[in-house]
Image (cartoon, rainbow, N blue to C red; front, side):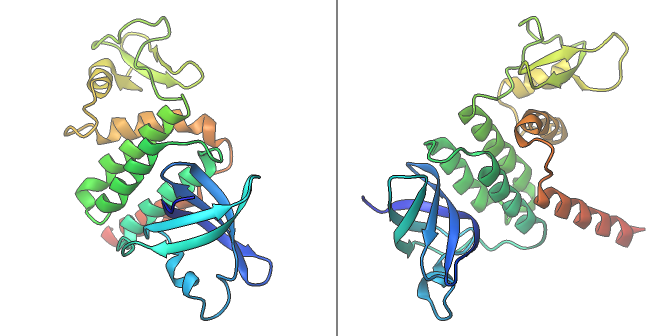
Length: 237
């Protein structure tokens, strides 16, 4: 096979000197493979196989578990620290958890690459992550449809909560203060996910859509983000 662009999503030790890796690849989606010898001290491949670093890889094997043959670095890893690093870990954990093995998703790969470019800039992080989440939801046929439970347009004067099982929004009683207003949801439906003031609602919608896919096991990266936010609050008091 021709070398394929890839990024490392997850790595864990395998046997004595190897590693079991999950890769996000351009043409084959998530690929799980054994990287032989990368845990050996002094291994050149060990330095290449790092999170957020662009790679070219080839592999062999017809089953779910492949064997890496070629692994070349094609650039420097994204320089992430603090919140930017936690956002990168979140992106990796999300894809490693939800992407089925070998489901092609070029849009997801493109949004992931764009996310790594955006994460060093605090003002660009939220929009980049929402774009990646939406691309993943679309690939899994689970993206919000921005209709009510009766398949009608959302009313700008009503408030709604998202029902992931129906991929639609349930209208709340008149006078309700919880949920999201229909005007905001219609802006999101038109693609204005980066508009001023919509970061919170956009995050609420994608989180609600992802929740049933993730199940009851929490994301470790989210817990780390909460811990970082708590530390900041304590410093500000």
